[in-house]
Length: 322
Image (cartoon, rainbow, N blue to C red; front, side, top):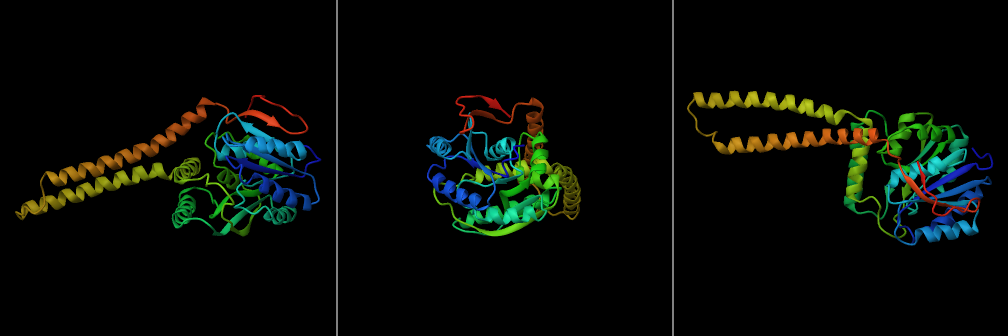
């Protein structure tokens, strides 16, 4: 670890050209007010706008700014991981570039860290500027995930947090390919606390977590920290067998009393459709687990850095893997 750097701020970036200048200014002001040495690590996750050139301009005029640029889009959680891998600070802060999470809260996180906490996560009280659908799906997502997983992942928290160097070093040793960083941080333990805040609307651009990516994130969390979906298949199968026997007895009783109100091919067809749909659903859940096992056994690198750029070592087109 470089003893000259006290804080590393990791900022994953994907098509954030419209907001990067203001993000940099606010982060610069906050970190400078800490009175200690810091680095701002912007991780470009395959942006196709002018984000890379803008960050290089920041690097040229500010030695605290560093750029890691992936060879393609590897995903938000992987970008966070790469920033942690390259960080040098005694404490590492993760914050998105869109300014929905206020950089000014970092100072409160630092105070908590200096008080002895090894993980300080930001917990949202309100989500401003988001649609009703987005708020409700996010609300359900966090609570469903917390109820389904085998560890306590605080609700209404994202990846905005501060972690101690020893926590960061342990996370670097975890080999998962389908990363769910906030879950991994909860899993490693240590002394953790929250700071509450109201989340601001995006300053510019569009959300990088639409419904499709939220579902992917939920699956990553479930399959990384819970076997309950697989157990659900066994419980539901046993329940369907019991229901089938009850239904069979029900039909026999109606047959004995001579009723023809229930029966026919329609019931058979409905039963087959329900059963087939259920089996396909359970096969899909188990397929998710099997696919992730395959991902782990292939042992491919988690990401490829196509270029790093900062004043200490201006490297261009240097391929690195992590």
